[in-house]
Amino acid sequence: MIFYQGVIALNKEIEVMVKSLKYLPDVFMLMLFGYAFDEYRNRLQEFIEKQDLEGRVVFYGKFLSQELLGTISQCYISTALYGRNKINNCLHDLLLKFLVI
Image (cartoon, rainbow, N blue to C red; front, side, top):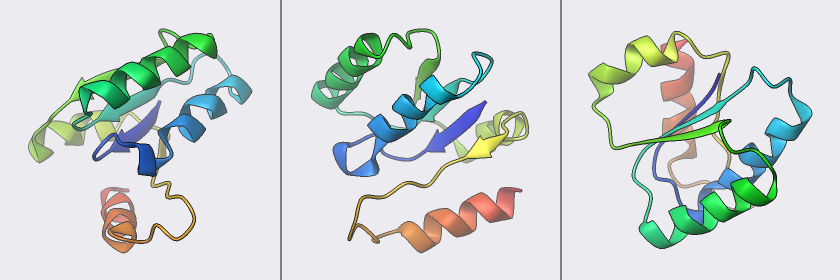
């Protein structure tokens, strides 16, 4: 499983993560934990369908940090993708990912 935690928004490069699934074996799934605005979530769902990746991307919505530990331990990859010049909160996110490992 591939794990993403945080706001699900345009500037988080979620489409890149979704598209990467096409290059991985079918056993890999993308698990998205975090809040997504309805308009962007709908747009992302359409993108997932166009990529023929339904069933390999799961939206979990809001979460409590304590609830994530069991899920994180089952994941092979944790992501922290940012577009060019989008470094706000990047260090925090990367440290969180490495501390969990």
